[in-house]
Image 1 (tube, rainbow, N blue to C red):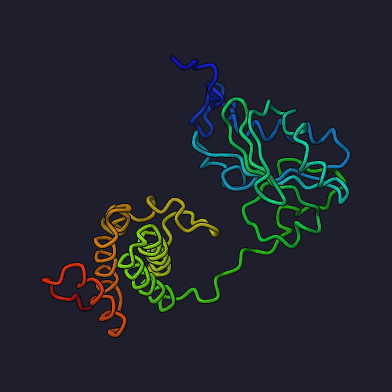
Image 2 (image 1 turned 120 degrees about the horizontal axis):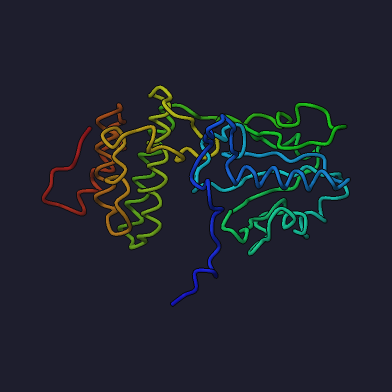
Length: 288
């Protein structure tokens, strides 16, 4: 039997809570937010660090942190210190022992603490931070001589140049068209990506454009929290993304959904319908 002690575990006690009030009204910080505070306290003792910024659920939206969250953060350092903080993790382990770590980007690393907290972080200089699009950052700690507003240094995430219903609709349709050809060629995995990922990404974009925002949308990843935003009767993901063996059914359903919800160009509709008919010649080709 495998030893339970060998497994990294999440911090105990308040794991899974956001914040809760104690009987006397004193607030207790989520253990993973406390981890960032502990890290900030250590970085404050090092003269080559300017600031620690929390992002994502460790940023300004920290109320949504739960037991499945990870720690996303930036460490802002002096110009000549970046390489040291990328290659050495002694500063990270000062907050808690690190069980696993690797460089996943030229600016940062991923790490698993010994207690099961997963972190993804990047090291930047002030000049680099000023050129980096990011949003929702929270200053966990910063050096006293650093200018205020560091969390707002970077430009806002850019809006896609063709963020329109026409663009996303036709991208979704052509994703289905290309995906069906991949399926007919026997490239099932490639087909699944076009039909069940790329096309569905465009469906989500269409809903975001045509539906009032009912949740906090992620500017970098539209699929985040999408289940909270759109119930199955609005976005039937279980039918649009049924899995590797079901590209044909997924393509037909998503195609029918697009035709029902939007005005589809009849030329591309006919082309997709003809491909679907090659799977079931006895059926009538779908038309919008």
